[in-house]
Length: 482
Figure 1: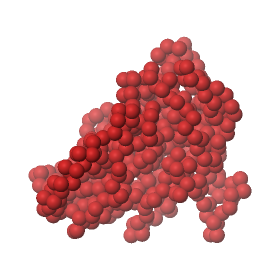
Figure 2: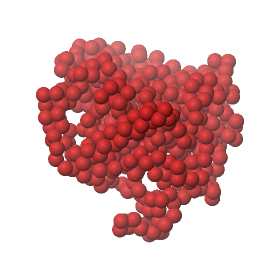
Figure 3: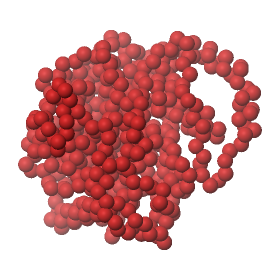
Figure 4: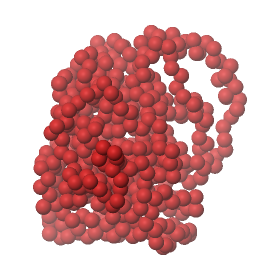
C-alpha cells in the first residue's frame, strides 16, 4: 500500500441555567417520536434520551500494544492505520460536538451588557469545551471523507453540523448556531498526533470562532495541547497544557488562559489560570480552576494577596514534596490529584462540570452528553443525511458490543478482538481507498458539500466556511460512503 492509500485515523455533565429563557419555535425537530424499538416514553410523552450504551466496553487489559506502537515512535499517528482496540464508539465529528455540552454559558454571555462579563463566560465555555476529555483514553474513529454529523437540541437552543472536508490531511469542519439567531460557533480542526515512546501528544490545530449577534462581537481562540500518558505500560492518564488566548475582535478585550502542565510533583495537574484585560492592557479579572472541574473569577488584587499569603505559609510543604522523589522510568506515574479547587473568598463561580453517570467507567468514560450522541432517535431514519455517522456500521457494531472472534497480529503478538466492528472498519477503509483510486483514474475532484475553503474573517488564517443549505434536507446527490 502506498502513502496515498493510507487511511488516516486521528485521535484526538451538562449544567442547566434556569435564568436563560429562550424560545425556539422555528427549530427543526424530528417527527414521529412515539416509540423506537420498544423504548418507553416519559410520562409527558417526550422521548427520553438514553443514559447508557447498549453494551459495556471490552477490556483492554489483555492487549499489549507495544508490538504495534514501537514502529511509530516520533511519527505522526494520523498517517497510520490504527487497530480498533484503541477506539471508542464515536466518530471524531461526534467528539467535536462535545464542545457544545455547556452551551448555556454562551446563552448567558448573550444576555450580559458588559463586555468583561461576556468575556468571562466565553472563557468558561472555552475551558468547558475540553472538559469531556478527562479520562477519555479511547480514540474516536477517524471520519471518512464526506462523513457528516448533525445535532439539534431544542432544549439547549442550538443545532450543529460537521463534515469531514479533507482526508489528507484529516480536517473536520463544524458550524453551530443558536435556534433564535443569538450566536454562531464555527471552526475547523486538524488533529496532529505524535507518539513519543510512553505518551501520545495531540495538537488540535485550528481556530475556534464564536460570534454573538446581538453585541456584534467575534471571539477567536485555539485549543490547548493534549497528552495521553502510559500508552504502553501503567495507568493511562491525560493532561492538557499550553496558552489559550481568547480575543474579542470588536472591543479589543483579551483573555489569556494558561493550561498548566503537570510538573514534576503533580501540583499543577489539570489547573487553569489566567486573566482578562481590556484593550489598554488593564487587568479586570483573574480566572482560576481546573479544566476537569470548575472555573472561578476574582478581582486581581484579591487573587494576588491570596497568592502571597499562600507562598508565605507554603515553604515547608514544598521542601517535603521535593524530598519524596518520583517513580521509576517504567511509567509516567500519575500524580495524586487534589480533591477539589479551593475557592478564594470573594470569587464568583463561572462554571462547574456535571458529574458523570455512575456507569461511566464501563462506558468508555463517557459523559451523559457523549452517551447520547450516537443514539438513533425516533424519526431520524429518512431525515438524517445518509452520510451521518450515526449510520456508520463499524461504530454502531462496536457500540452494540457486536463481537465475532478473529485474530489481529501486532508484530510478534497475536490477539483476539471484537471483530465485527473491526471487519466493518476495514471494509469502509478499503471502500474509501477504492473510491479515491477511481477519482484519480477519472481525474475527478472530490466535491465538498457543506463547507468551502476560505480565510477566517477575523484572524485571516486559513479556515473552512459553512456554505449553508444542509438543513434544507436535499440529500439525493450525496455519495454512498458506507
